[in-house]
Image 1 (tube, rainbow, N blue to C red):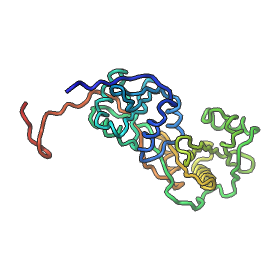
Image 2 (cartoon, rainbow, N blue to C red; image 1 turned 120 degrees about the horizontal axis):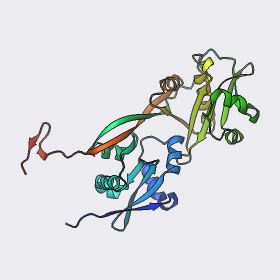
Image 3 (cartoon, rainbow, N blue to C red; image 1 turned 90 degrees about the vertical axis):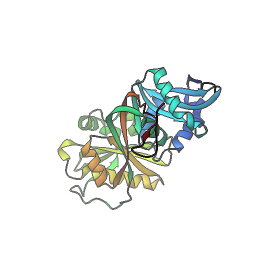
Image 4 (cartoon, helix red, strand yellow; image 1 turned 45 degrees about the vertical axis):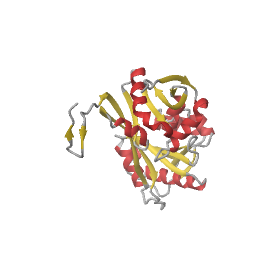
Length: 279
């Protein structure tokens, strides 16, 4: 049997749009804006088997963020991954649990885990939270709010003034004081979804500020006929609890697999514990 020959060529997103669409349609859960931005900024490589385009990979800051082989060539996915990792000398792979192929591939490797993220969908609880900020006003941010937003949130928002002009930043205030802020980012790869997020002023924590902001953002998203999604750092326990109290459910997680080597199990037959087969 002839050896299988893979080749890897740098490419642009427009050239492999169908492959990327195939990849995203295989997800059990939509990407949030964080992953969308990573896909936009990744260095993309087209994967070929002989002359056939069979998949792609995306590398961001030296880490493998995206890897996919189309269904017709799934039987070659594990070998293509191994050769690509060797070709690029990669050591770190972002694994998102809603990507079934990459989860299957990574199971054949030995690696250490760095937990990265949790992703949420709405569980359907739509009633307004009962909090200590019942009289607070939720509104769109204005350019005149910029100084106070920066003072209270630091560098949480990039492109702040641009986002304010795009009507994607919101303020929760009481008696003229900002209690916290919300943000929406409309999905590009998953246009039926809108990513929501929030940040609270430290001195107004434990009042339900985050829940109130998230509830209002969810209502806004639903009014547009869309679905709210959210994400946060795995170890941001306060944000995770706030999202859950606002009715969001953690249904997917992400971790970085720091690769050691591909497992090389001995030949066996039967079910566990199996019978060793002598070569």
